[in-house]
Length: 309
Image (cartoon, rainbow, N blue to C red; front, side, top):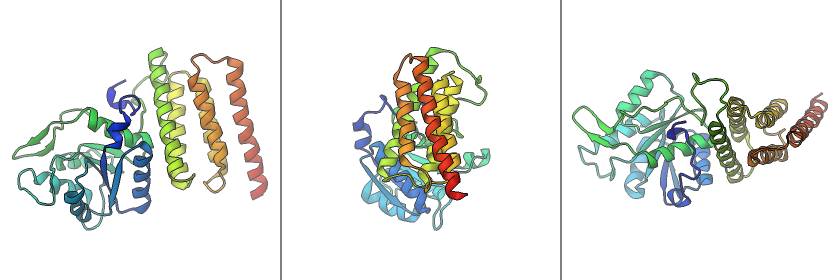
């Protein structure tokens, strides 16, 4: 598993994040708040926001961020033009841009090769593809900090060196689609378990930061559980796969955040954490945990059917 797939666990210290200033630029208030909450829950020391590129440029001079997360499509000045204006300052000094080399991470739903190439030519460092998980956001910070790209200033291009291959459609710590469906290697299993643990902890912090589970958070929980089930299945960890599938079943049955009981979500998170903490769990105990989760979901589903029936 390549280093760019790793999540920020032992590789990033609290000081790495607490000393960071990050600007988030997005015209959609829900996305703006969600990314901000992920960053703050992850331990980033200072997060400030702008709703378009013009306002972001005004903040650059006074706030001097260490990193920028920006949406692509925005009114007034979109994310691409914002990045171009920042990189141009390396050739034509701009009083609003104190650091033309500031790393820029684009958060976008645009997946086509053409869209990616245009963004790269504008000078984007890394990408987070929507919909994202907390770990997808935090892993981009890790990549920027741990594997910085050399900065190039030439007649044809100004920006980070693009020669390092990066998976642009990567939205979480998943394996390649061409990888085998099952991986028996014990090292892979340990890496998968660590990845799941970090992802769940990031999700837990986000829920705490947002004061509970709303629709955006529930959608993210669903994606995290899908990723968890996928990774567990690849490394033949049937106990974790069973627990994550139970959570997916629960969310499907409830149909929305208003009907979901935060306690049930917490029970599933605790169960998965318990399963991950055991190097070799007694099969009977693992089965008991799985049956308990499924029983909780069955009771909640039955009550839901009665309520709506």
